[in-house]
Amino acid sequence: MKTPSATPSARALARFLTLAQATVKLRGEVTVLLTTDAAIRSLNRRFRGKNKATDVLSFPADPSAPAVGRVAGDLAISIPTARRQAANQGHKLSTEIKVLILHGLLHLAGYDHEADTGQMERRERLLRARLNLPQGLIERAANPQPARKPRTSAKARAR
Image (cartoon, rainbow, N blue to C red):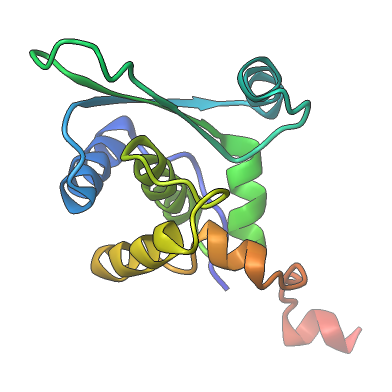
């Protein structure tokens, strides 16, 4: 099993963000904030009225803003939550952050899985395949699986 690792470099995340934006066909600048559970809980409470930590929040830019130097929006990602989800899914933290970035970008592009009839889920599945990413957030919510237990070595099991 792959284990979660250190937070990926800003350069690696920027490369993925550029690739994912092109794949989503989202134009404009996107800022990504990597933060804590406490900070994302505060943002979630303030902007969505939900007093709980979450994995990713999307803040689309004002659509009436001038097109020159256009800003698409901002994403906030909780690293502690992403780390837990990566461990639960059996992949690296960097992979989980990529899944969260893609999910957030789709929200910035106007998709809303809480209100649509599966359009965002289908689009996310297609784009994850193109970007070689594992199961997405919407699918996980629809098909929850128990947390993976850490593997122990044969020597440890024999004790």
